[in-house]
Length: 113
Image (cartoon, rainbow, N blue to C red; front, side):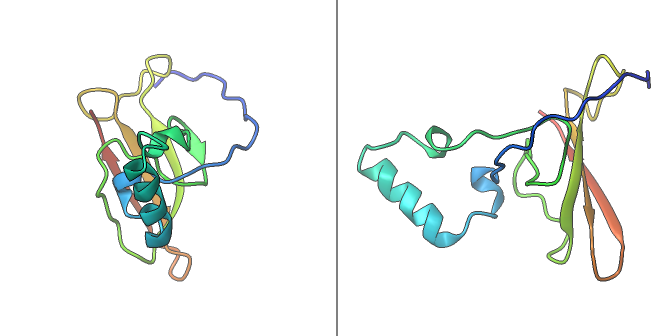
């Protein structure tokens, strides 16, 4: 890996990916109703996902459906970067780190395009 500076950005509102299982049922029902009524095309008309490097918020999975266990909370994700000479998987993947606050156990998973 090559060292390179990272600068913190302003906090942004962060939302889960549509098919990641983290959207409450009443909210997903409302979004589906808005789609059926033609008021929106899909979930992404309402929100902007924030991928890349980030601490906190929701993981921005490339391949949704990943689970590390219900007791684990998302902590951070690290994206592939040419500048840092870091690649997860075969094609611009991302690594996700989770922690169980009760046991302090950590888990990591990754996915790619």
